[in-house]
View 1 (spheres, helix red, strand yellow):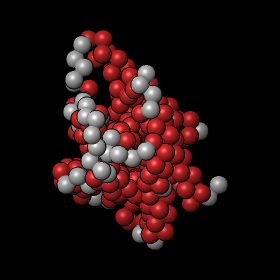
View 2: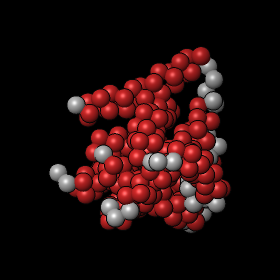
View 3: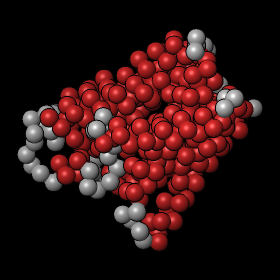
View 4: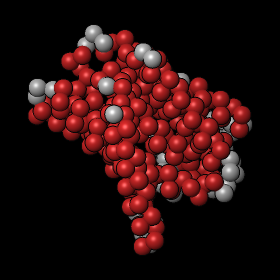
Length: 258
């Protein structure tokens, strides 16, 4: 199986699985109780992928670790700015736009839904470029990176789906819009494959930016939502699921290395 085929397959599978999983949860009131559990697992998967695979590989490929660290730091600031500009939109906590919309019967004639689709399409495109960079570095790194991206996409897509429904879109149209948006990752993956093959020196920088985006999502978007459930039982469950996410990445790394 060629590297390009891996990139396309991972991008398609990630988009379709995350959107369908999110749709099933968003449309099923009972299933929504598992969103918090998925968020905890996603945090572990993201941080595990960053610190066990992506950053070690980026350090191995670069001759300037200080510059790589500066890129990581700058990337975190960049994603903070992008989120402030509502180009990067995530929804994992009780007071986000999706939950506020759920409390109202009226809708805004599609304005919120359009905004969320623009941000989500941009996000998916960047995810595709990140997946391409990882696969061009190493097949096993690409698989681990794709799994980590899928893990955090499902909770995000739940919020996006809810915003579309309460912005006046029908369920079928909301599902199709999310699916179409998810295919931006395929475009990003193909573009990344075509450009990064001739610019191998860019791969460590892009891996650092990928790590920055995952750290930012985990620390700034996901972890604060967990603090809303401060009971000991909830905390223990969160810790176990985070460790499970990290453990999944570690086990995948061992299995794929054999």
